[in-house]
Length: 160
Image (tube, rainbow, N blue to C red; front, side):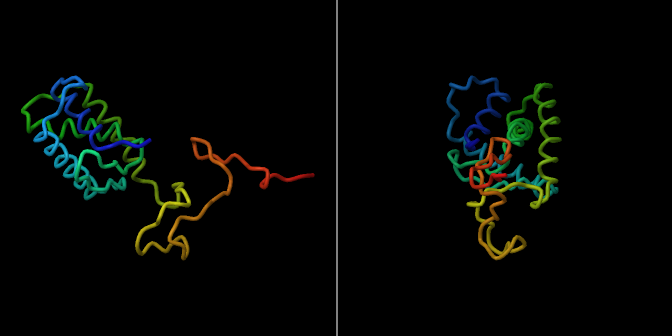
């Protein structure tokens, strides 16, 4: 699931200001949303919740956290921006933020060895703990389901 910064920011504004999703967000508010999103996520990273977030510079940038943390990001951004607009946050948003934070913390606590990465994903500079390849190892040559379980191909089956 690919989520753009625009979706997170627009949904936060929708919850915060009771706007409909069709109502345009002013360019000034979009830029403020980007700043608040980057500030919030880098602050959370500094506090120990490392979700792999990459700073965004425009609303069309892709959000680089696991899909399980997106709902938390939206609710948390709503709360984070509430002081700018001097509005009270709805209790339902506070509950979503609390529930989502728990899920995001669970995602952040997984070590890289416990996560499943595709073999075409670069490890990044200096990451050699998985071997000398610049990419994560392919744990199975089979096709994967949506839940990352392998579907064995004919080459992987045993004949009696």
